[in-house]
Image (cartoon, rainbow, N blue to C red; front, side, top):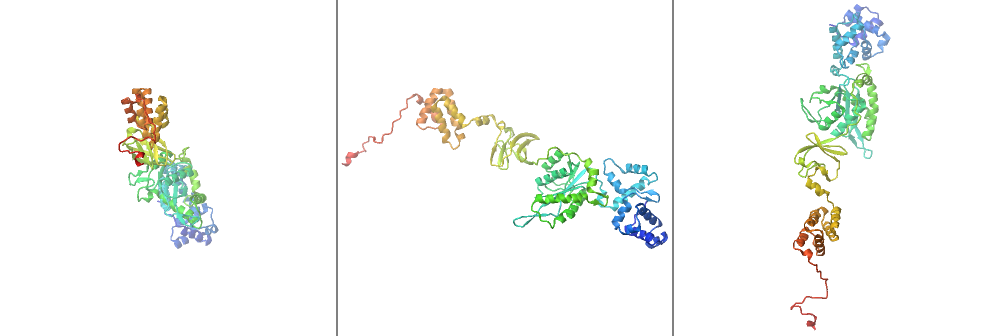
Length: 511
């Protein structure tokens, strides 16, 4: 088994005693309590890195470690594997340690065997961040989360500070990071942030890993969490799979936790002394800082997030859809007895056969769709005002025929019988508070023509108009008793004429 790596403090001291003081291996070993082989190994690595003592003295321990261990060097005649490069290659699909060992031995026939090769790699992983133990394949996962530390925007008029939500998305293989702020964590903001994240990355990962927050998960569960319906639609639209992290298991989304921490340190902390007045203005500033963050060199890899993104994730991401996801809201409802369902203050029709059935309503900004057992049964233009949107095809036959009648149509039908019939129909419709209240009376009067003929109905309507009768019952009674065939006598009112009666004394009585 290969020996453990010396600390950079001891390595630096070995180089100082050897190069600056010219001491022997034995003297250095006795002074520092290290083996002779460790001293030789440190000198070989430093020589391979083309370092001398003045150069070493100017380096920090981290910089010295990067110079000594970032490239393969020979130890006791064998070339050490470049573990950072191995870790990057392992994130490509189908690449295994066995394959990488074969390629390593092709370049270095006298190199380490498979067991020691793997041991060097495992020791390198153990020494670096814990999150690196979790291997993420290129293009496999996108982790999302909200930051605990929230930035604030300022009201221009009052100076009041309002906290906003900070959304962070990160790709597993490259740690390429996206961040933005929104007003809330509600579903519409949550889904919109996902959409902008995949557009920022220019592609979609195979799996999306969120926390089990209510905006995306309706039923929190360790084994079978229930996804919010709109979130499912978003995943289907972009061809990804949502696998929420288990409750109280932060290592399931360790990448997101680390990305949130980095964003808080390198973006939120830098905004603390800046005054921003809107979410849009803050997001513009965050985009500028994201460029710097993704271009920063990561010491563990010797590469930036952007370089690793271009190398690993970008080629492996699935392409974006041509159409941007349109946010939808889902609601479950039962069909009312009037074959309408309610959304907000407006009612929308469905086929009358679905009365009392349970349906699902899918609403966008412009449209409302109704589904029954997965089949779309109704589509309407969305309206937010109180009222009804009714499709004629959804109505029973009797209701549909009733809907076809209008005041102008009834009056026109009456005029085909005669002017008196037209006058009576118009009077009935005008006297009702709502024209539809007179539809039945008018239809009943007009249909009397089939039984009594047009001429008799016209005469009956003339009598009804004269005596101010305004109903089907009156006209039917006139025809039934034959009054339409009796000449109508209407006396003109005479104010001078008084009825004769023995109790009426007359004007002469008072003379």
